[in-house]
Image (spheres, rainbow, N blue to C red):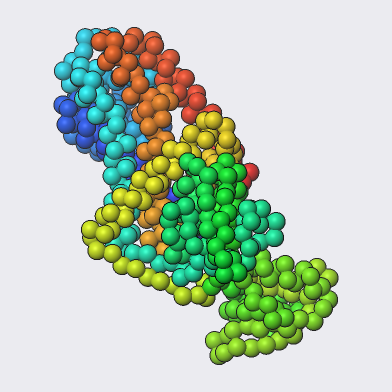
Amino acid sequence: METLQTIGYFVLAIVPLILVHELGHFLAAKATGTRTEIFSIGMGPRLFGWSKSHGFSWGPLAHGRPADGFTDYRVSLLPIGGYVKIAGMIDESFDSAAVNSPPQPWEFRAKRTWQKVLMIVGGIVMNVVFAYALLLVTTLAVGKSELDTRTIAYVVRNSPAEQLGFRAGDEIVRVDRYQIGSFAEFLRHLARIAYSRDVNVVVRRNGRDTTLTLESRALRHLLVSRPDLGIIPDGMRPLVLGVETLRPAGRAGLASGDTLLSLDGIPIASVEHLIELLQTRKNVPVLLVYKRFDGIHRTTVVPDDDGKIGIQVSNAITGRIVHTRYSVFEAAGIAAEQLWSYTVLFVRSVGLLITGEQSLKQSAGGPIMIARMANQSADIGAAAFIGFMAMLSLTLAVMNALPIPALDGGHLVLVLVEGALGRELSAKVKIVYQQIGVALILALMVIVFYNDLTR
């Protein structure tokens, strides 16, 4: 059942993005008077579709595509993409039949360079617009909800934060020139700035301001390995999800729903903090303070030889949450700022992949990872799922803009080259160019599937 749910959320996330992307190409073609032979959601064999001339039909068309100037709107077998077949354009289908005859007025190759560019970038533009619209919707509907703290309660042992010099009790004051109001805001500024330069973080420690200078390259690697750096902000506590009745916790009276507050008088900041405290108290009675619906309770529990007490726990927010609502104009500005920041971050991430600073294994994910993330975001709520779709739409736009054959950026390179030369390249050159691109994309798909399965 869970697998079906994951697949369902994957389809729900990816299909609208494909539809929007291909709609961008389709509308641009219509605006320039260019025929579109196929509008497909999905890749591979045609399952079913409709055209003005043939009506609704199942399976493949007799000749593979309509020859009467009307578009075949179809759904194809593999839900991993989609495409618009524009008349007179050699694309990843390797169809070169049309170029053996003189250009017709309704064909792609008969259009001016700027019209060709418009048709190619139409999908990218639509994905960016769609991402902005989703960000605007979530900003208006939900506003901003953040834990009202900038104080570090706990630094995980041997974590990136410990390596960088952060300590429990530090109050984060400023990241470069940006005043910090919450822990989430601190992480946002840190991740964004790290992709361009070293970062100066001012923390208030023992009543005095201390500056930590974080080297950008090292920080980027640490953020990839652990986005929160191992910093637990104030206002978090472990929440008991399950108790093994015959283990120490069960015998001590703990139950699901209890919030763990302190151990031997030490406030428990997180699950990892709890594990660390228990590991140093094997077979030693400890005083555990916890909160239940009817008040504060105390009990004595004895961790076993492994430093465990037989509970399943998860981090829960117990601190004050600040909710902020925005007007339409405020939300429009915030959504635009988010769109720009995320775009810059994606572009710089791609640059680090190209230079080899970030590995493909660390950064690339395929359909399996997307499905898992879609399911996880949907479990959090509708706003999180819509936000995930916005990031996915923006990622699709950035990736398609890359100058790789068979992608929109690769088609754009060909159009600009032909515009500069003042003539068409030969069909043979275009087909070889597309074959190289398809080979690269297939190789990338193998890698991301392998990453998904081994992650």
